[in-house]
Length: 77
Image (cartoon, rainbow, N blue to C red; front, side):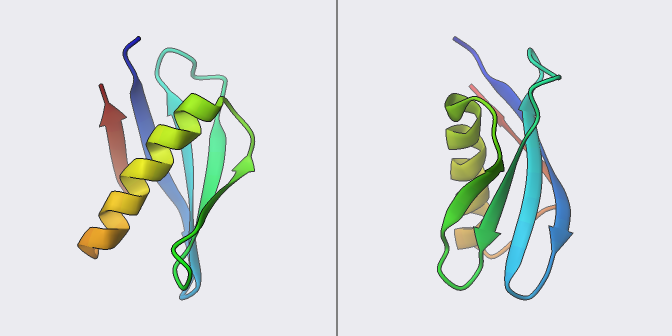
């Protein structure tokens, strides 16, 4: 199964950043995640399919480790 997940920043503070995400094949299934910048933990705060969250969280985690949190990004596979 192919995924194309769009990920967009909703809000950012010194402590955390929130992103909305959805797979383009399921645009009505929007989820939201929160990255805690201090602990580097990511949690799903607006439920959607776990597969979408796992991929969006992996992408945001990678960006965070690289030192940049973009306004928009995507996961494609």
